[in-house]
Amino acid sequence: MTATDTHRAIEAVWRIEAARLIAGLAGLVRDVGLAEELAQDALVAALEQWPESGVPRNPGAWLMTVSKRRAIDLIRRNERLQRNLVELGHRLDLEEELPEADEIEDDLLRLVFTACHPALSVEARVAMTLRVLGGLTTDEIARAFLAPEPTVAQRIVRAKRTLADRKVPFEVPQGTELAGRLSSVLEVIYLIFNEGYSATAGDDWMRPGLCADAQRLGRVLAGLMPAEPEVHGLVALMEIQASRAAARVGPSGEPILLLEQNRAKWDRLLINRGLAALDRAEELSRTEGAAPVEAVAGSGGDAERGEGRGAGGAGEAGTGLGPYTLQAAIAACHARATAPEETDWVRIASLYESLARLSRSPVVELNRAVALSMAYGPAVGLGLLDQIVDEPSLKDYHLLPSVRGDLLVKLGRTAEARAEFERAAAMTRNARERALLEERAAGCGTGVEERAAGGGTGASEGVTRTSPAGTD
Image 1 (tube, rainbow, N blue to C red):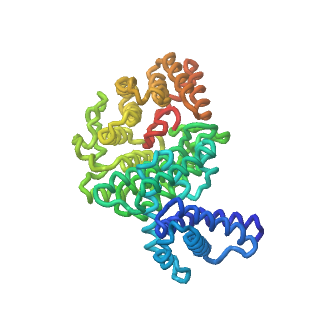
Image 2 (cartoon, rainbow, N blue to C red):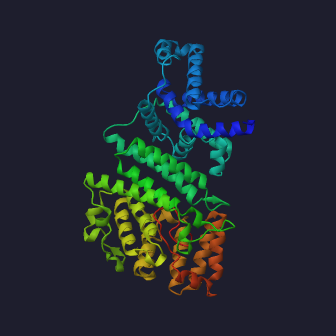
Image 3 (cartoon, helix red, strand yellow):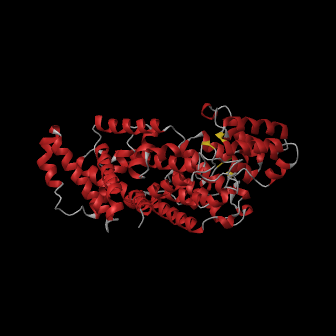
């Protein structure tokens, strides 16, 4: 094996073992920052020794052993920790066997909740999660989010300091605290996936690496918390959304809209995994007293007036389902449609109403407007948009004018539509999206955009931050 092959092997091992390694060390030293430093020391040792000695048969155990030795050396050098030497020295005895698998899994779950602690800013939580759980370097995180590397490095340093200064316990929250803390964890994974699925800035429409990192984190969390319906709901959402990756981007990197995608390129394995996770989320939700998604996604009711009743006419029926499960159900509607015209937009509109009841978010209402327009006509969707057009939170949200432009085209109001597309293009920070919006603006009044709109480009997919219309 050449030195290059060895370095590639080390990189692969680190991506696989980093989270478990840091989790096991944090369980011993009770300090995430220190645990990460110890793990990094072991990585450096591997980079120095493996090119000559070869990759060990059990590389994870090798890294853990080296890390434990570093921990003992550090404790012995640090007089402040001498009082812990006897206790930790016993626990870190190099002759003892490695922790049992269940013990490592428990530590890994503790690490998830520590890295996503609400005491940290959202940006810090994302950076810490990718660093200690995803195994990404500071440079990789910075490049993924188009941020300066020193900024990301400082973010991680401050996060570790905050956890240490506040003496955040290395534990899984219990009782009433669990729901709020789990929500924070799911939010971080969701944000990582969304940034990969539709990049907010830069020249690339997608960053598949971030999607893959989020999917892996979601799967790990589902294994650690198998009884939590929203964990499975988020996994389902990400798997189904990711299944479209190959069809979402053209040969030159340009975005391909949902209803224009070649569905033969959709990854059926990911779709099936997503649908299975959705079934699990629904089953767990029913166990907790929620209605199944089928009950939530009943008739459109008064949707023609922009007041879809959903839930089969009983608004309370869907309240037990969480937002990720509802969004996964919306994504599943697209996944089950073998052709665009087979999409059940009435059901999607109803699901969005249930989601709107749950979240009271203007962005969800924006998505619901698209679904209503597809189910009952563009005038219905535009009517709902006009109700939220002055929402402060949507002031700089480029998807609002993008959706309005799409609906105005369908109503034949092309001059107004062109102005909306131009406004959306000026607001977005993603170069690919800007080019698409400028193209749509240029097509208004030439017949090009009218034909595109006739194909139903206003497509809500189930991820409330990504584009509901005009993009994907």
